[in-house]
Length: 285
Image 1 (cartoon, rainbow, N blue to C red):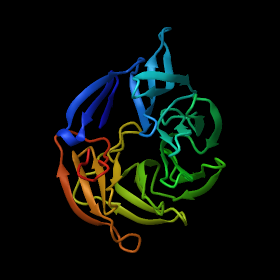
Image 2: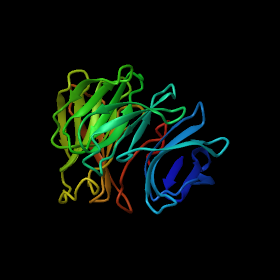
Image 3: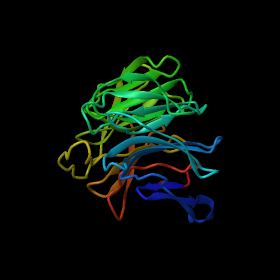
């Protein structure tokens, strides 16, 4: 398990009681880490970050790091911003959003993983943020925080082929099942999640968390419903609730015909921001 913070990356061994193995010091200044993606086969890690440069200004960079040799392979700067990256399964292409924190962040960079060269861009909408490449490696899913559609682009052509929605509000964290038939989406101003049909683009279900207070909307950088994950067996969805310090669990085994069914809510000691599972499904983080 790799845990990212501005000063470094803490590495834990899941199979040995989450013992800390080591800390990798960030090789460049990083005031904020926006996202990271890795490929086990090559041992390559890609980190998007903001950091101070020698002139005292901000670098908005994507960093390629060799986890075996523990060295920087390349670092490139991108404008206007960098945000969440995703990597194709063949390890050749990175899709990097141009930033939720600026109205100029309306597109995704299509980047060569070998050297950081920008090969193409995909224009979507301002507030470009979250990115997922589907397991089939044919589709990349693009979410903008000020746009109520989840956009699907073809990785062969980098052309938009579908828009899923409209959802209730701008798209926040989302996930897609393995067969790429269903998308589970957090949105602004709604405590819960929505389910989209990838093939048709229709919204199938809108699931509000009942019995918990929804706080006021604090803007795109302070969101109560900021995390949704599908268990590896694809039977449960876990939804983050930072305001109430809970994660809410739903049975989704009956989808698409049967609506998600509430299971339970787990109280946490501090406000959660995202949620993900270990590959074997034993642990949620």
